[in-house]
Image 1 (tube, rainbow, N blue to C red):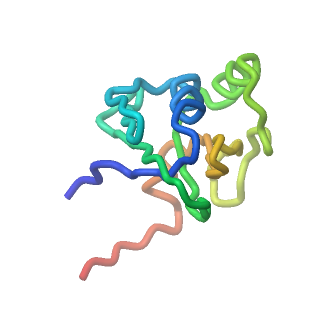
Image 2 (spheres, rainbow, N blue to C red; image 1 turned 45 degrees about the horizontal axis):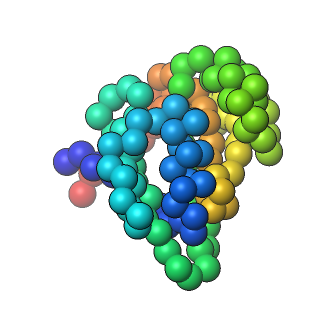
Image 3 (cartoon, one colour; image 1 turned 90 degrees about the horizontal axis):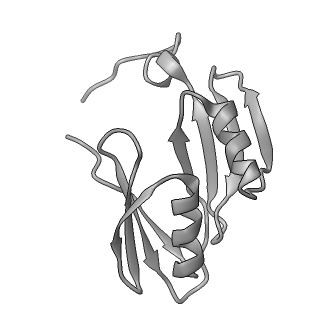
Length: 126
């Protein structure tokens, strides 16, 4: 099994697609109500869907980059505003936080081997 994509609801397609292109993603589908992006590395994609109702943003989106601090500095030069600068977390990830134009919380992070193999990893399968 492989995760294909996650679709985020947005209330301004033009502003949202620009935000994600400026973040470094390649837009591969562009319609007035739907956009899809591929990540710069790997096979992951995600999409945006235009919603006319109020968006409740309870989901946190994580994008990983080995050179996290350099990436954050590059984005700040482009005008991105961060709620949290990169800091080391107790769960062994280094994270920075910002929000997209629709209010979705985004964590830019680097976890290295701790992403899927933290010291406290357990294996449970049903």
